[in-house]
Figure (cartoon, rainbow, N blue to C red):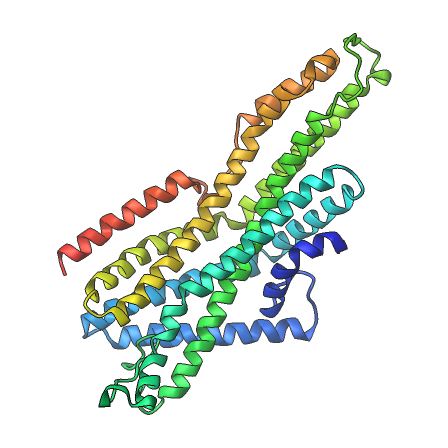
Length: 392
């Protein structure tokens, strides 16, 4: 892999390598890490689903158990999609690497570096937000232990688990093994979400960078051209035609790369979107239900924030891709197209016509992931929350 490209992908590489999903990984270590991930994620999901089913008779506990189980399904969808589409993910990464090699030593590499930095900064920000949003969930079980150890308040505080599994196990007897397992399981879940979501974001940012490279090429396509241009030169001497043809190739490359991202994720996005909409309503409901117990409601506030971040990450890249793909028409109009030959202008017209069909990330090929629909999902989830709270 090109050293310059890996500089900006190091964080993504480390996250994916830690769970055995980095495309360049091979051998026994890859499968051991992946098996370790599946062990913790699978057992955590088993405990949560089992605890929810066992608590069927206690409706309040049953409802409390639903959001973590829904998040289990979101994570399961992510990893299953990534494994099933491993070849497509690998192709996206290899194409990214090939682009860095293709533009190495050229001015276009500066444009790609700018977008690569944006992708890296986004990865850092998303990582911080995800771990921070789960902090309340992870702190709550420690508080009673510390209070009991320090004997504060001269009373004994009840021990708490991160998730309700006491209907499945004797929580008093197996408290510390369950608590330790829940911490490892939660860290595995968060790492899985960060690793997959951020690499997909990097792919989208690279697609946007490909459109920006096209804009740079169009801006300089007629550098050095004479104002007294020959609009009907022989094809062999029509340098503007061949330069514009390179721009068309770059445009098609960016479009194809964007389509490959969509093809690898549209089913996964559809499933995740439906689950998150339901999950937002239930976590909001639990936050309202436990408003009088700040130590419990704080967990659900963090849980809700985590889901909002995940949903936003699915919507924001789609908005970016849409904006950059339709900007091609603007790039063309701002170029010195009037200095090109008539033959080149025909190509320009085709490029403008194609740019009127924007690229998009979708959930199930029909729901477009963008910021407008993100706000619509939030409003819908709040409506469901209003219904739930009105019948509690």
